[in-house]
View 1 (cartoon, rainbow, N blue to C red):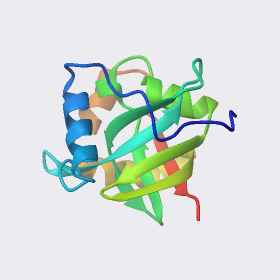
View 2 (cartoon, rainbow, N blue to C red):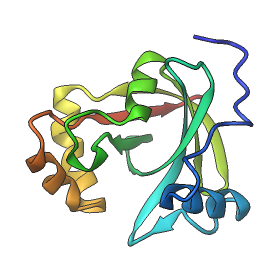
View 3 (cartoon, helix red, strand yellow):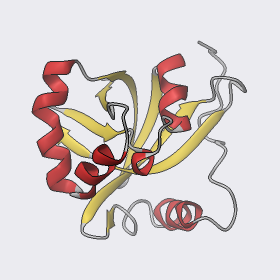
View 4 (cartoon, one colour):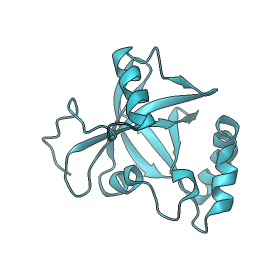
Length: 149
């Protein structure tokens, strides 16, 4: 894991994408605009690129359980895992911004038992996750982020 990561200067989504617009509003308002999105809640996840070694930031829907933050690596039901998921499986140290709060954390894929417990939590936040799972043969992972004290 690289130790000289410049967490404060991540690469953001490509210009013209809804994600970039969402992220910019989130950052500019210190999370006041953007944490609530289309009836759910979002955070900003910064991972370390598995190839580049540079920080990469992505807005994502999240849930909470047992003092942890939960993410679904759905990519809309695509056959491939999203890049952010592949990054954190290679480098589990992450940074998240939840509203105005920024924190470091360690990310991991939920165990089968955790996934079974957390999947309904996440579907309650975003019902389309069930549709995404039905579209693909891969089991969509849930990511558990443990904030560091």
